Figure 1 (tube, rainbow, N blue to C red):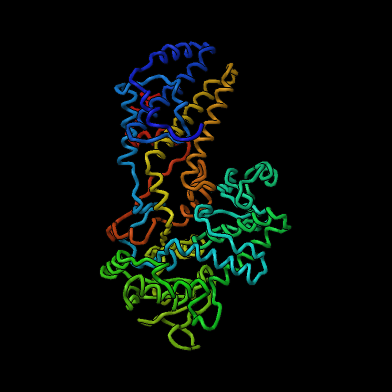
Figure 2: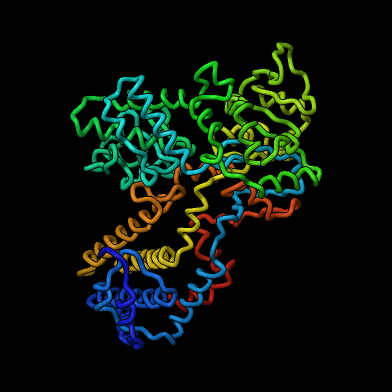
Length: 566
């Protein structure tokens, strides 16, 4: 079962509603086991025909289904009441159910009328980088390894593949496995890669961990997570090198490769020479020399910051980057040398997350002074520092503050836990993932997957331990189809690793941290401009599994429809 369901295949579903299901259902109720499998098979075919017909109306395909899958289906009636109810649900799904990539999403209740101070990280929060940056990072890392760490010169031919890695992956530095894990630290086996290739035998992974769960101790000591967008080219290079060593029978230890790539990354990002004038590492100097290649101007972001100031809100910039780098970048982004007027306080080279955990003092950046900073003076820029002094100097703390950043661990966890700050995660990938989820192909395929899973649950319940003849084979066929559909839904996001935010049915480890430590999240800071500054974000009611069936139906007003569809 591969490919797309074609429009020609849809056209064969001419109107004629089968009446066989009613008589078969009656026999099943009379406990005639010989009718159970035919009943389930016919119900499957009927539901598939209905989903296929509705997909056609939306000019969509059901991924993983080809025209061959429709040859034996019962024909369905566009005017049947059951199809009409399903169509109503689909129309809701493809109309009001569409999500905008500019929306703000809510994990925890947040009343903006109570927020007095807005803080922002710089990289990938205020600064929006172009795709070219990842190519440059990859090339710099590659060249450092070859020219300074004596890696094989053949590696100079490696090129960055933007379609390979995603954010939030874990690299197993003991085994050399790159993988995605879910919110319960379970491995999504279909994502485990050795180099650029899927692992040949997933049983090796299962044997290593006595299952698919990674223990907290192993996770902490042997797994390295790729938490920010800067790490994606790093993951790609690491996988490319590992693949090269395997292909050329070069003995290696994955930990050494990971350590060397990390050392090269430190050189790229940190100060590299006195001539850099404090801008930063090689990457920062490259960006400053060619702003238009790496940065995008953001008038809507500037407008949002100006609006905050105009309405009496305090604002601050808190970043690990150096002042010369930020100064050059914000002059370009805002098209103004006076960008500091957008902030009450500017803190650079802050060394987050140590900023939240230590008592390192602040220093002034404007002149060579060695005396202690005991207060913030208007118009001054400070470096280093710590959260305790920041709260003391500004007089702000707790839920009156909201801080936006792109890195959950460096930016958001500590201020949320230690000071009770409200937090907002800026996740750039959110935009493209939402666009994918909004496509008719994806939504109709997901709808069919959910229907298939309900059929599986129903079939297992019918068995009731009676070992119905032919039922095991039917269940295995459906489970095989389910696996193929889930793979298709994974591939539409990323062929190797799928969605940044989901495994097949659970949030990813990365998404769970966002859910836990970010009150809200969105794809860009300027999306906040669409909400009044006294807006209250209310999260959806969170359902436990034992609550979901009845409460979601009650909340949606579809209790009557649900009874009718059974």
